[in-house]
Image (cartoon, rainbow, N blue to C red; front, side):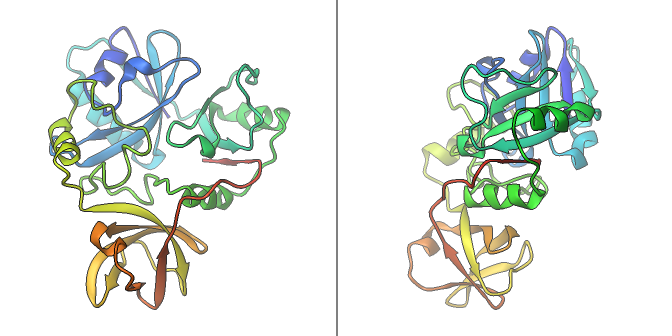
Amino acid sequence: MLRLAGPDARGLLQGLVTNDVGRLAPDRALYAMLLTPQGRYLFDFILFADGDDAVLLDTEAARLDDLVRRLALYRLRAKAAIEPRTDFAVAAAWGGVWKDGAVVPEGLRAALDPRDPRLGHRIVGPADGLAAGLAAAGFTRADPSAYHVHRLALGVPEAGHDLIPERSLPLEIGLERLNGVDFNKGCYVGQELTARTKYRGLLKRRLVPVAIEGAPPPPGAAVTQDGRAVGEMRSHQGRNGLALLRLEALKREAPLLVGDAVLRPREIQDGPPRGSAPA
């Protein structure tokens, strides 16, 4: 978790990330990416309002220091403090316990996951109080694998599993479908290539939820069709997975093979029963 605070915090983010930070509200989180100048994926995060002049960034913990360094390069003279909050934790909670107007347990922030409302709520707060707050709200603790099954069934990629820094193109990995880009907000880092890809119809591949028949292949394994490479595998949990596939391959009936396994592209499914899990 990262916190940006100060009178220029939101303005700094507005000029950098793919979504319109002006739409951020106490009850509305936003999904966004920070791209390279060449329009490749670099970091992604869910943004939470934290008062009038601060924003919390729910992002990949393993690359938090890299994100701090990158934001520091862009900050220049902006009045915005960049503060890692390793005392905070994040959970995903689904099943409809929190409705509009419901009271969020004290000390926690909850908002529908902006990527797909069927992912339920994204909950952030002090690590020592998060589990107790969720239990008090009626959630039962689930194994993290339950969350990944849920995520993959909805076709939602995740940093550390499906998104490759400085390589993945944001529209290929579903940024628009996941409500993570605003094409009317003005300039941000990597905007030119992202807009060109959309408006000139240059998208050739996309991340697709797949059912796996056979031994689950490792991430990065080549997907072939009629002996020709047409994509590569991303993460999986059990028989559910994501694969980056050429659009032309999805139009053909020939099987998609990866190792000894067959991939069956499928429609995005509804989520499972109520639960919560560390995200």
